[in-house]
Length: 204
Length: 112
Image: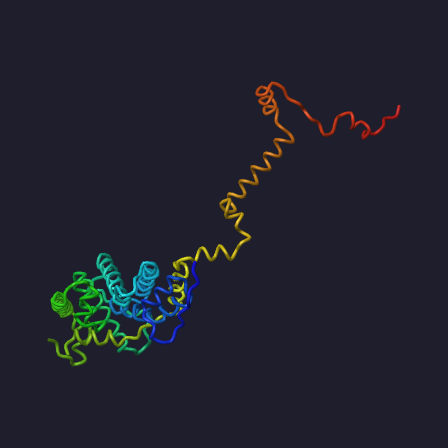
């Protein structure tokens, strides 16, 4: 094995791909730097789609493991690590949502908080709404759920989503529009349960 | 802002916890999957190379058992082995390390 040059963490100046190649070449610090940079983003994407901390952690670990395994074959300049990871996490999350739907967790089965603090009504309501949103995503076709989540839960632009999903920006637009309409219809029947009539919000 | 947009905004505002346990799991995976990790581990433990060469401790145990059995058969061959060898090569020679005659002086004298 040839001696390696360690890439030391000095902020965000080193591209993700360079750190990944350094990891593949045996740099022991590269994995730590990459994880510190990427894991919060990966975990955030997973928890916003799944709204289940345990499942989100499993997805995040699996996505990072796939990154470590692909490292030796990674070619700098062929694509961004973040784009690749968004795609992997989106696919892993829709797999989980499909399994959740198959196991009978329906829209009307809104998860209760594990141990709600007394009086934390707002926290409970937020938790209820986000569980309902995740369960409604499970009802959508995979590609619609991914496009909606990348657009509205990650705040990405249509060209960015197009690169992640390997489709045209126009197809992204179509998927997000149809997905959002379907989500609104799925959640419309739960306005009372989700407390939207209590806070004076207007339903469109 | 409609209900759905409010939900999206709430989801985006949620804190993202990255626990120490998750980080530890990810780092353990990274270490295990890092190319060359196995080779470096082997080099750091040179005293185990004989054991590894023979296939680990279970295989080494088998080799030792076979060696001890061979030694025992050589020192005290069963009758069937002696008979087989005699048939095979036509003759056999028994070697006694402690001839019976030599043991007589060890016996206690009997008076009378």
